[in-house]
Image (cartoon, rainbow, N blue to C red; front, side, top):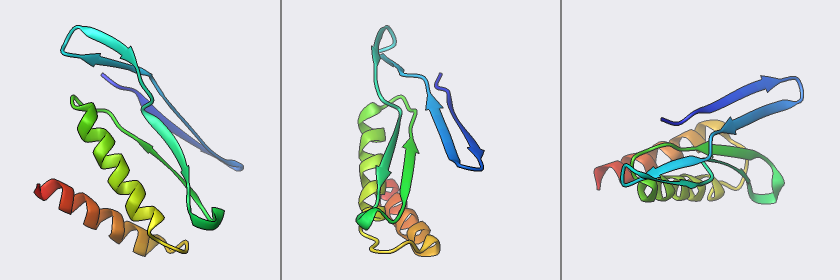
Length: 94
């Protein structure tokens, strides 16, 4: 089970998550489940949180989402959402 939470306030957002991953049903290790990224020209920031039974797939998904966002040169939310959706559909189809 994973816990990822977010809280908004007048000055921004607070994100938090547990750091434990169970590998093979018995081994446990500490990992990073939430990460903050910064866009081109420091115009915007985003965070991605992931929890799954396959850490490799979560890493691949987060990397693809990062690529879709970084490919945008300006802060245009509808275009960012389309880019993210396109990447998700492409990844899911494979």
